[in-house]
Amino acid sequence: AFLTSYVSKTRTMQQTSAQMSTAATNNGLLRKHLDRLRSSPNQTLLLDGGTGEELFLRGVKDDRKIWSATAIVNEEYHGILEEVHKSFIDAGSQAITTNSYGITPGVGFTDGDEVKRL
Image 1 (spheres, rainbow, N blue to C red):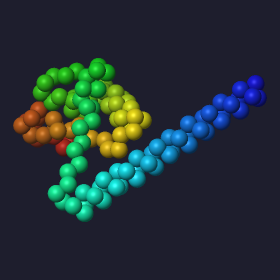
Image 2 (tube, helix red, strand yellow):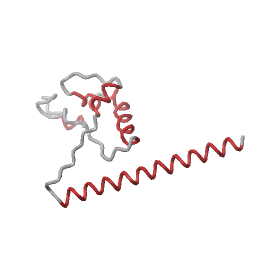
Image 3 (cartoon, rainbow, N blue to C red):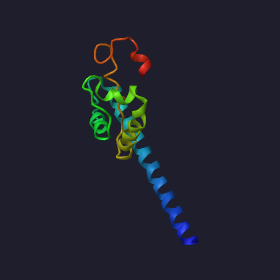
Image 4 (spheres, helix red, strand yellow):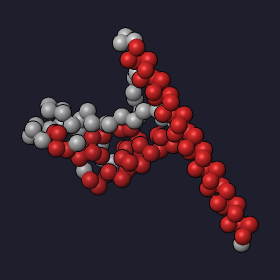
């Protein structure tokens, strides 16, 4: 039992160390990109994480009106949205998009409450 516990704790510590190392690397890479963008205004950082498609694959309804913003405005989907973002981070993503473009006047909402939904 001691050996099993020791091996389990060692694996957990190694995984935690690897996750911290990955997070530090990702933070460094993101800082590098941001520094590059600040120093050269003609540079562009394109963010396209495929969040919407992943949300739809995981059961968020696609109403073709507010698209993936459905996961933001409907509390029942908040957990799925968090899972999707976490999966991108775990896969090594260096940036996460808010996925909120559908919450703008004229796109999916006309009641003036767009900001409240964010």
